[in-house]
Image 1: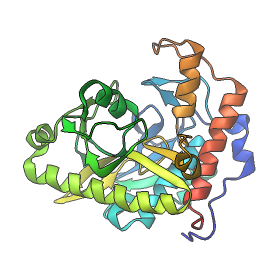
Image 2: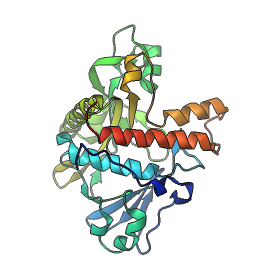
Image 3: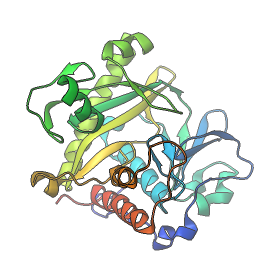
Image 4: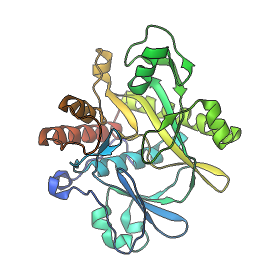
Length: 310
């Protein structure tokens, strides 16, 4: 993948008529439907992950899709898995549907850009979260206790403050509700000390390499979460990597001027908060201008990340 040629998504994919909310592949068994991704079986050793245009916020799937969002997510994830040294090894086999096994090749036109053929792995039920800036739930916790997940931080920090050293704050993996932050020692008890130490080191290395790459391209990578699985005796990066759904990106120029301008779902969360929604299902429909502006943020993120330094 050439970093000097920014990834561009076909204009027709951006139209509402082309939004995909429930991916289907005739003859392919569904393993799991997540909030955004649908996972299909592709033989005993492989899966096909298809990113839909569904959008979730506050653990609720919104009724309004964002066209091409799934394409942007899948392309960004593939980009990072191919680009970063720290992302090796990972589960990605191919993101070209013409190379997938049958019956996925027959659906190549629908899957192109939004699907990945991956190796099956035994997932560690831990979200590996790295925070390089104080914000979000970490900021709220810091305001109450001066710490994040039991890690004491200096006094006087503000929302968005960079941390002197990125911190690793794991959480239990919950597919149907809120993830729960746990201390690192809790992670060691859950999956074993050696595995926990390995995944913490991998996560911090991933964040550091991606942070530097994003910074050079006008983005601040504030925090991110990673998932890992075991294939044989090897821990591999799985699921998605450093997308605006699993990571918090800000515009670098705005950040340096003292503002936090998001390239992730925070824009939608802010609108939902202003709407008066109580965060309980059903979620309200998004107005067209919010859909358009959200789409623009995803497109800008992928263009910047895959382009030249600024």
